[in-house]
Length: 186
Image 1: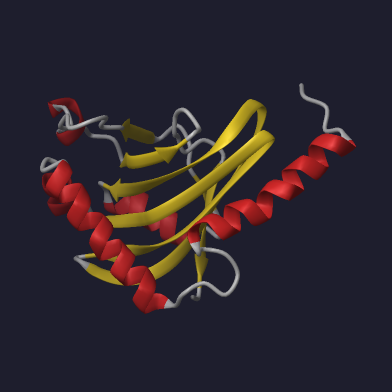
Image 2: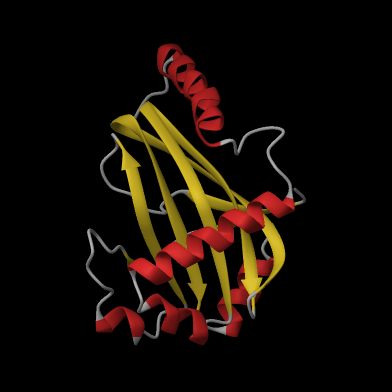
């Protein structure tokens, strides 16, 4: 177990403004129109790069799109992003995403991710939760380079499928462990 020292705590607190400043997602961020525009652009990019995701979108009960997620770490890390939940192509709610991590880590990165809720039950559980935490019930489809999603992903019976893409920065890897989604009013 990692001990949280005063020095590590100070370093982690120093990373918080960095995370908020990197994306424009921090305090005083843009309203719903800007979030919706980012969501539209993210979906268009994903469909263009990974055409198989159009089939997931068609089958999904709902889709949560996080256009820009910024993460930073130096021992302790954090991440933040804002996005929209869409059902039938229409935005029904806005969400923020926060992430905390600890361990041997350093760097900063940005990525986009989309959660496809493949069942009405998974979507309902997400919407009813006061703070949904991503967990083991998510199938990850992390396309790298120009590759497409494999057939297992597009035909999966997983209740939630996560597509992470567009990663840039100095941090290696992206996942949704320790991520919490909370409904917001932008």
